[in-house]
Length: 400
Image (cartoon, rainbow, N blue to C red):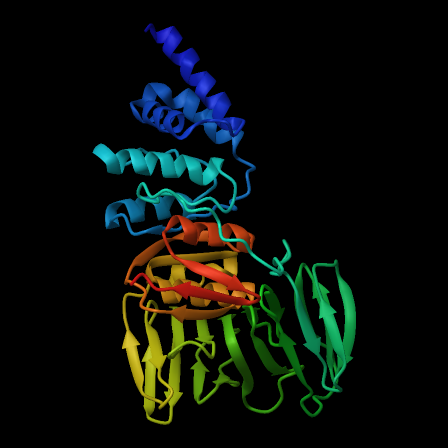
């Protein structure tokens, strides 16, 4: 086959991929061609240009195919929704073909498609009966004012909502903002921001601190901080970027522990179905205090506090995995099935029930939180996870 004919053929493959009608075999062939040498730079540029505006609502969940492939796939998915321009790493045999197909499919296939299922033939998706799908937009919450008044928040434009003491409450750029006004500090007026399953909402406190509240969570805080400390309380999960104020330490009460903040970025997960309260530090420093002791964290470390107050420090944490929810994703790296389903339960409002013994297996991947429950369940089907749906119960059936 001549060079001219080769290029025309691969141009046609590129067109088929752009139209979402490219077969897996053709996708592998196209990726292999693009990876051969720099003479394919023109096609690669066209590929990048064609998908520059594609939103990264990619879905990937798989039994772990090995560290090398996992890292390469996550690198591609965490970057842009286009094929990166750097020289790709070389693969051999099945691994090379699987990675090529997955990288292409992560962009070309619709959200909800399982990638890298190791040749398993997906079972027919289990019928979902009377199960309400989450809304496409999850940007929602309820604000409860000090007098008990409730305000439903959504993605509407800038609005002035209320006045609490010497703070004006607004929605601005898709977030709840408290702006301190002039005047004497009044007695604290406590407000509560609450999200349901499938909802998240960002908040800016009167001191400039930023908080992102995850699904099925709540945070109680004063409209304006008075006195010599800033103290709030949390249930569920939230990510924090705390404004530094040496004269007013910031403290977060979470069940039986207190987290002292020294100006930092961190995540706290305190869902009731978690075995421990996990505080993960990304930047700065925090001190975690329980009835059995205290522990200071450095970036990349996580404290785990059990129900009896015992503390444990875990180092080398993948913080991207911990805070992926903030960017609209589930992310798993060698997570067991119970961890995967526990996160799904918070978002899709499910009760997880296990029947029989489920064989151990590890999963990795990234899943858009805009994916429907139907598509997420299809991924469980494709990974040979047996289950049935009864109302809001997801009943996982044992392998033995």
